[in-house]
Amino acid sequence: MDGGILAIGNCESLEKPARSISFKEKSVKNRLLERDWRFILDSIYLLYKMDSLDSFKRSSLEFLSSLIQANQSMFFETSQDTSRTVIFKSCVSRGEEPKFMDEFLSGTFNDDPYFRRWGFFPKTTTFRDTDMMPEYYRLNTKIFREIYSKQGIYYGLRSYLVQDSKAIGNICFFNHKERGDFSEDDVNLLDLVAPHITLKFAWLLQEAEKGQEDAVLDRKLLEYGLTQRERELAKLILSGADDEEVADKLCISRATFHKHISNIYRKIGVRSRVQFFSLFAPSSSSCS
Image (cartoon, rainbow, N blue to C red; front, top):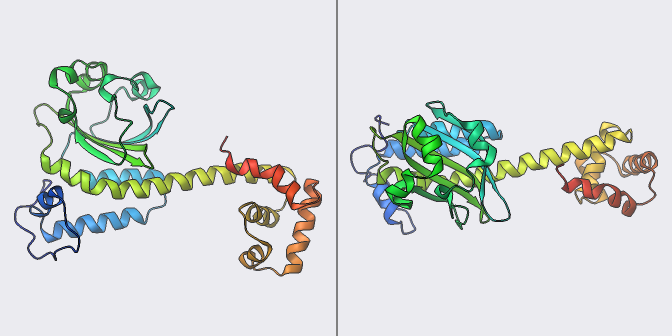
């Protein structure tokens, strides 16, 4: 792209989509050339192919930063407490190095008025800070005075990534006052791309959680002296697979399957699948 967020010209060569498009989509569509759309689609495709959470966050910022010019950009993983307050967790950044991150991630600013009601978005939502609160109010919040202003940050553009009504991430861009506020095109473009990032990010978070649960279960099975093959079989059974499915997946005969089951029960000290499940099933849903 030509140094900025949007290229000059109309994308008349693009086929008209089958569905009706929103005003925001029309606004962006009328300013993007076909090569820009191809870049966006190719980038989203590459993001969907990723299986590393950290690489996904970094690549998402790299992709978005080529579209939206900013002094600093950040991608947070977030969660929410029982009051739906957004809790900012791990973060990757691009552009100017963020300062005071230890203080920010400590939770000191989670209930700052700057973030009030931002944990109640029903879906992925994109906005400029200046569109969400009056200037006098924004400039007098604790986080603006103690975090943003000390870094020269004046303007913000954010997208809260929401899956199943829960904020799972936050992508934000920051500008100095001299650079000016983000444009409507910046908002519209991020608003179009963010839902795609949300879907893949949610899947990666689920896979990471499954990986943690699997590691916990594997360690517990190892404590009973199970071999690697026996642990593989045990985890398949605990996942809900029946005897035939387990045998097919491990490419073993039914006789070999029953031999492994007999050895597993003997090592663990159980006599039935009910006892086996009662002992291990709770661990398969825990990530402690």
